[in-house]
Image 1 (cartoon, rainbow, N blue to C red):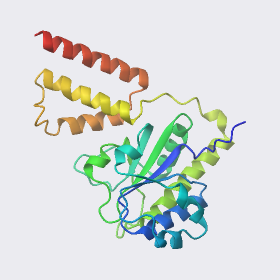
Image 2 (image 1 turned 90 degrees about the vertical axis):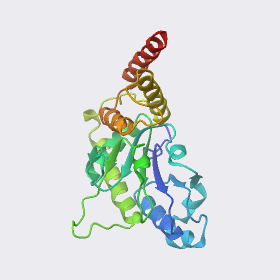
Image 3 (image 1 turned 180 degrees about the horizontal axis):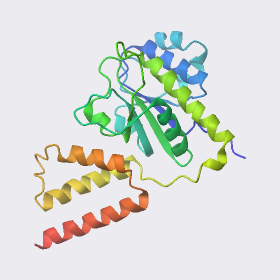
Image 4 (image 1 turned 45 degrees about the vertical axis):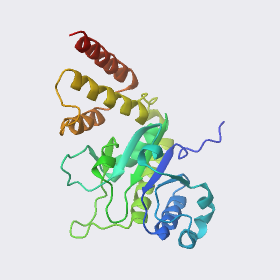
Length: 247
């Protein structure tokens, strides 16, 4: 037997949190659903007395909060990253409902690290940050007032993850061993190699790639190549680069 908790592989990430009280409220929301792993990216103020006040009975989690400077650091090593966002974007990303989000995170947390990312209270996530996510999740709310406090959003999605985890425990036969997927670092290495190869064959201008790389990010994030498939793609890119240099 192992002491590993099924939620240990699930990171809750909060970006540039402005009000320290929201960190405490998020910790309280997490603890009620059995989560304890929170990563803060460049918070405005932390630690802070408002965090302790709003955490209430979850203040024991404060000492375990990780603080990093970028989203790339927060999701390093993750096989799956889901970002919270609205549906109206210049480049629509694969969207999940809150229920689908819970099911996907639980399924893939069985075989590796996963992350659920929440944006800054007023500005949300930037397009660059959203491009680092495999999927986006949007909470179905009143269309006339779809406004949720970040801690409320954390509560809802953690609840959905918990429900999916309980379903997994009650019906384990329906789940198979997780497919190995590349982590975020491996995917970024692939995108770098892809951009270089496209530059070598003059498909894009490296200094001004336009929207091509953004669209290719979206395509491969949607396709979710497995580890072996990514190795094949990288081998193809290596041969393309070799042939381009010969010419």
